[in-house]
Amino acid sequence: MAPNILEAALLQLDPSEVTQTDMYEHVLGDALLGSSIYVNIGVAGLTLLFFAFLARNVKDPRSQLIIVSAIFVSGVSIISYTGLASGLTISILEMPDGHAMAGETTTIEGGPLEGQEVSGTVSLWGRYLTWAFSTPFILLSLGLLAGSNITKIFTALIFDVGIMITGLGAALTTSEHLMRWFWYFISCTFLAVVFYILIVEWPEDAKAAGTTEIFNTLRNLTVVLWFGYTIFWALGNEGVAVIESGGLTSWGYSVFDLIAKYVFSFLVINWTRKNVDTISGGADYGATGDAIPADD
Ligand code: RET
Image (cartoon, rainbow, N blue to C red; front, side, top):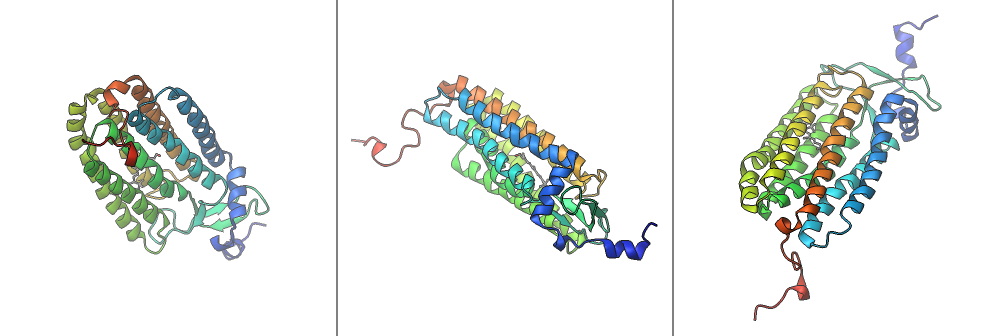
């Protein structure tokens, strides 16, 4: 006989009873969710090797700096998806009253808790945490390509970190529904600062540096995709839950990541290795100490 409402509530586990091992098993047991994570670990690893191979003959330090910055986006991606796959940066959270997923339960898909109901929904909060480390390298390579100055690059990077940390705040806040959207609002204002630099400031710098064409391509890709992430968060299971499934929401981000990270980095690295003369700051670029030639 099916349990009545009271019995069902009693049978439900509290999220605090779900361990890291249970989350690891859940990812492993949920084909849709699991594949959205494992595919990216593989692609990140392959692109790390491929990009290093592509850039193997570049000797100019300024070109290498841009390339290393783009390569490390894949480095952070491995960290990010390994955190999710291992159960370390993924949790079941109970959404506050008023949220579309309030009162929802999650069925654990694998391991000893297989089939067990837990109150709350799966949050892949590790994504937002690690975006704080990957996206600055995307912007660094873009700012250097545009030949921008330290002040503008620094401004873009710190506001970018701000976007992701406040995004993490939005995802992890369970006390009050409105506070989630307040975090989201702060995050969007930081995004506006980054967009201003991308759309107004850097194109001027890129013109002077002779990199307008590649800069515009990468800038357009970035603005469209980053706007996409922002809308997708609002529509996914952490926002208004037009997309309720955790697995589908996760796949959405994974597809965005494939383009915003690997296609972006490929374009940066491939262009840079073929245009070292445009990018070069000389053999001493960035040298410190004794390597800097004396004036006299
Ligand atoms: C969140 C939610 C809060 C509001 C805003 C967001 C924007 C996220 C962006 C993410 C870009 C991620 C990339 C990852 C690749 O490694 C955090 C979704 C504004 C712009 C490019």
